Image 1 (cartoon, rainbow, N blue to C red):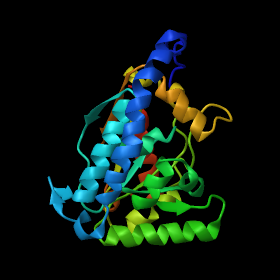
Image 2 (image 1 turned 135 degrees about the vertical axis):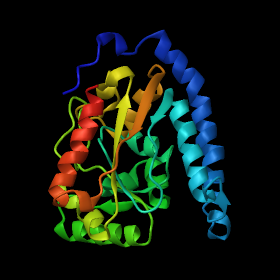
Image 3 (image 1 turned 90 degrees about the vertical axis):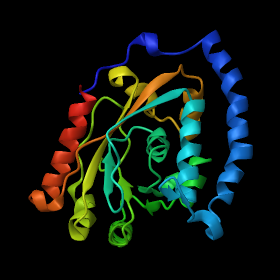
Image 4 (image 1 turned 180 degrees about the vertical axis):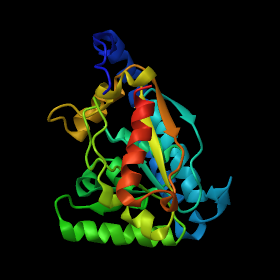
Length: 264
C-alpha cells in the first residue's frame, strides 16, 4: 500500500495560475511545431537510420516524450538500465503519463486499451509508436494481441504491457494477470519489471492518477498546473522464463519487485 498524499501537495491559487501561464505556450510549441517534426522522423526513408545506438525514429520519440514530461514539471530520474533487443517491459499503471514516462527512456510498442487511440496527442502518438490496441472484454481481441506480441518478440523487438489491466488510483499496485506473460514464455525472452513512481517516495502517486470519473482531458489539464516533482523510473532485475516455473510465477515475481520499490 502507498500512503495518501499530504494536503500540502494539492495545488491551487496563484501558483497554479502562474504555472499555466508559463507552461501553456511551451506546450503549444511542443504540439504545433515539434509534433509535426516528430512525424517527419517516422518517414520510412530515414526512420531506421542509426542514431546513438537506436533508430532515428526511436531517438526522436524518446526526446520528444522527455521534453513533454519536463513541460509538465516532471524531473525524470532513472535507475537501472532498460534491456536491449527482445524484452517484455511490465510496469504499474496510474495515468497516461506512464506511457510518456516509459517512452522518454525507451521507445517501445505498448499494449493499450482501444480507447487510448481516441485521446488527443497521446492517442495520435500511440498509433504511430507501434502500439498494439486491445478491446477490453473481447477474447478475440486478446488473442490477436497475444499473437502480435509474440511476433514482435520473435523479431527481436521489445513490447511493454501494464499487467494490472487498467489504471489504478495510486494507493496500491493491483494483481498482475498471468496470461499476458505467455508471449514472453513462448518466445523465451526476459521480462523486465519497471516501477514508475511520482514524487519523493511516491507521495504524488494519487495526484497523478486519474480521479473518480476524471477524463483524459481533465487529467491532462490538471497535471499541467501541478508543481514540479521528481518522477522515478526504475528498471529492475529482469526475469528469465527458463529460471521460473511458468507465467504465473513470472507475474508474481514482477509484481513483488515493483511493489518493493513503490513501498521503499
